[in-house]
Image (cartoon, rainbow, N blue to C red; front, side):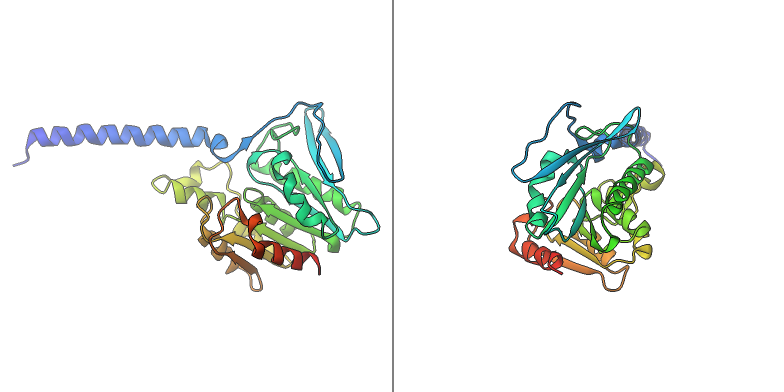
Length: 272
C-alpha cells in the first residue's frame, strides 16, 4: 500500500522542481542576449588611441545604425593583404586591438568591426543582422583588394560569423580561433536539461557553413578551453577534408596568443 504521506511529499517536491525548471527555462530564453553578449558601449564622439597606425571609420548604414570599424594599417608598398577580424563577445575593439600586431608585423592590415551595441556600433542585434553587417564589412574590403588577398579570421563568438562570410564569399583562407560547432550545441553543453534548439535566438551554425567554404580552413583551439570545449573544434575538423586543426596543449579560451606554437603557426600562414 502506498504511503500517502510519502506520496504527498513526492508531489510537493516534484512541483517545486518543475517550477524551478520552468523559471530557469524562461530566464534562459529571455536573457540569452545577456548570456551570449557582453558589450561595452562607447560614446559616439569617442576617439580611439592605439600605439600602431590605424584608421577609424564610422559607417552610417541607416539613420539609426552605425558600424564602427578600425583598420590597423601597414605601408601600401608592404601590404600583402587584409585580415577581416570578427572578434569575441566582450567589450569592443579596444579589447581585441592588441592582437592586431600578430598580423601587421606580417604586413597584413587588420580590419575590426564592432557588432551592434558594442563600442560605437549601433542598431538592433539579431543573428540575421550580424550576418548582414559581416557581408557589408567584406564588401568594403573587396572594393579595395582582391579576394585572394583577404583572410577571414574569427575569434570565439566571431567564428560562426566568419565561417558564414567564407561560405558566401571568396577569400584566401579562413582562420578560426576557439570555434564552436554551433551556438545551439554550445548551449546544449551547458544547459543539457533544456530543449535548446526551439529556445534559441542565435543558432550560429558554424558547421552548416563548412560545406560551402572553398578556401583552406585553419583552426586553433586549446585543450584546456573551459568556455568552448576542444571537442567542438575536433568535430568541425572532421566536416571538411583538408581542414587543419592546430592543437594548443593546455591552451585556454583567452590565452592562445601567449603560446609560441600559436605564434609560429600563425606567422607561417601569413608568410605564404
